[in-house]
Amino acid sequence: MLTNWNIRFWEYEFFSPEWLWLLCIVPILLILLYFLERNRKGEFKYSRSSTDQKSLSSSWIHWIRQLSILLFGIIASLLIFAMAKPFHWSQYDDFDIEYKNGIDIVIAMDVSGSMLAQDFKPNRLEAAKKVAKEFVDGRKGDRIGLVAYAGEAYTACPPTLDYHILKKQIDAINGDQIEGGTAIGIGLGTAVTRLRSDSLKSKVIILLTDGMDGGSEISPLMAAKLAKAKNIRVYTIGLGSDGVALAPVQTPFGIQYTPQQSEVGEVELMQIADVTNGKYFRATDEKSLKSIYDEIEKLEKRKMEDQHFKSEPPSFPQAFLNWAFLLALLTWSGNYIIFKHNE
Image 1 (cartoon, rainbow, N blue to C red):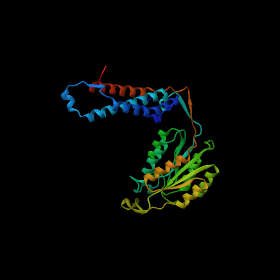
Image 2 (cartoon, helix red, strand yellow):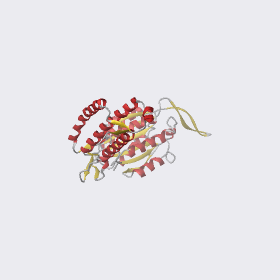
Image 3 (cartoon, rainbow, N blue to C red):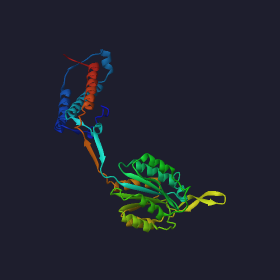
Image 4 (cartoon, helix red, strand yellow):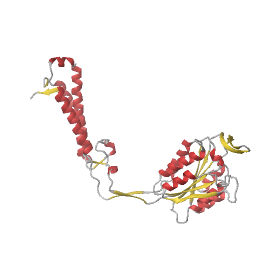
């Protein structure tokens, strides 16, 4: 249950919304009270000494009286909201959530040496890992797997609902232990094999690379046709800023970072997406990469969230009543301290 001081009425639903029509009367009531107050004569007797009275201007007293009228209107509105029996689904824990139709997703991530280029902070690979983990956090009920590839590919994590393990594997992947290069066809082919025949109806691969296919026994287009045969949609992401970027190069003196031209195989990536009825994206910085994952998430909203409520949620008028009581107490205290009504 949320705190009993939330009176953001637009966040509530109401069991008896017909009471809300009384809110139309509140402005009329305020106008009547205003004219009655303006024409009132000597109904208040000042409770302090004449010296204290002279120290206060009449305009100050006037505004106190206007504030009292406004507070009366607010109190009346709060009581009306309370009578309408407000309730909030988020305050109610007595329900079950089922995800009827999840998605099987495999993220195929390039971990070749060029992914260490520093046009993303701290580099392309770490930025890609960060955004991929944020994407995982946004999914529920989907089995998500991870394939890492460079000159060869391996399955870092098969499709799973254990997102904690998956994110640990995302953190751990790199190209240190596999052959160098960029074998996009092998990376995509490995991802296709991870989506088994018993996978859910909706199957997706997110293929990310910053380079061009270096050639292998399976071409990117061949892997795309294999994905299509298994009804797998492939979203391709070309990673890298336009122009040059500092990238690692092996030299006789060790690895040196030198300016390198970004070369993304956009034509191949577009073909893969087109064959599988997916979509190609280009990410030139971390912000654009995150927006791409956000768009993919919107495109793949296949799951149906079904809420089963075990009983009708109770109304929560306490917040409105609490504020009404507090404001009434403040109004009465203010009038008692400053003014004293004639009996």
